[in-house]
Length: 255
Image (cartoon, rainbow, N blue to C red; front, side, top):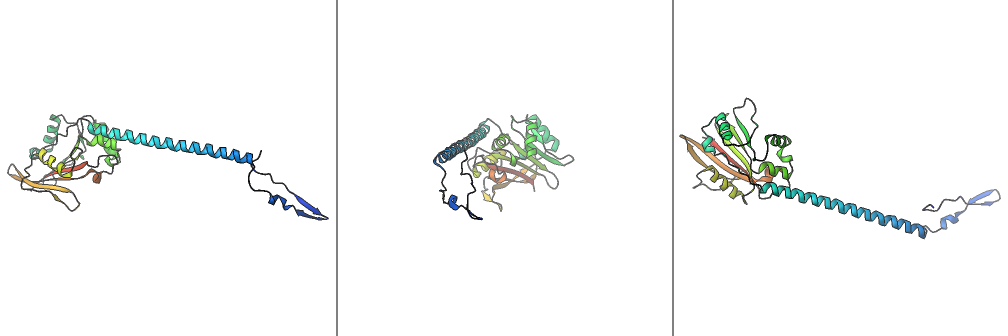
C-alpha cells in the first residue's frame, strides 16, 4: 500500500469539450491514520538508533580520553633519573671525551650529530626507551607525538649540544615535570649544576622566558652560565601534558 494517494486522471465531458475534474484538489492533504502510525514508528526507531549511536560515540571518546590520560600519568609516575650532565666538568673535555664519559656512566644516548660537524648534538634517553624507538619518535617530531608518547620520551631525557664554531657554548635542555613553578625548576637546575647563585636574581627576557644568570671560573677561563625556563606548552603544543610542566635550558658560554 502506498503511503500517499495515487494520482487519478479525472475529467468531465460536456459535448466535445473535456474539463479536468478539480475535486481531487479538495481532498484532505493529511495522510491516512494508518500511514501516520507507520511514519511515527519509523521516526521513533530512527531517533532511538540516533541516540544510541551518539551515546556510543560519546562513551568511546570518553573512554579513549580516560585511557590516554591514564597512560600519560603512568609514564610520568615511572621511576626515572635525569642525571643531568654537569657542564662545568665537561668544559675542558673534547667531543670524544664527552662521549666516552656518557658511555662510562651507562647512559643510553641517541647521537644526532651531523657527520663532519665540530661539536655534539646528543639526546640522553630514559632507561626504558630504546634508541630505535627514540629515533622513530624524533623522526616524527616531538610536537607531533601524543601526550603519552611525549611523556614517555621526555620524562627522564635531556639534550646536550656542544658548539665550538666560535667560542665554546654548551647547552642542556629538558622537560621538568616535577617542579610546580618556573622559579622552582630554575632553582633545581642551578643546584644540579652546582652554580653559585648568590647575588643573582630572577629576570625575564624579551620573549618572556624566566631566567637566572651568573659567571663561573674554570681553569682560569671565565664562563657565563644561564638557566632559563618556560612553560613546556610554549615549546610543544601537545594536549594532555601537565600545565605546570616546564622546559628548562642550561647554557654555559666561554667569555
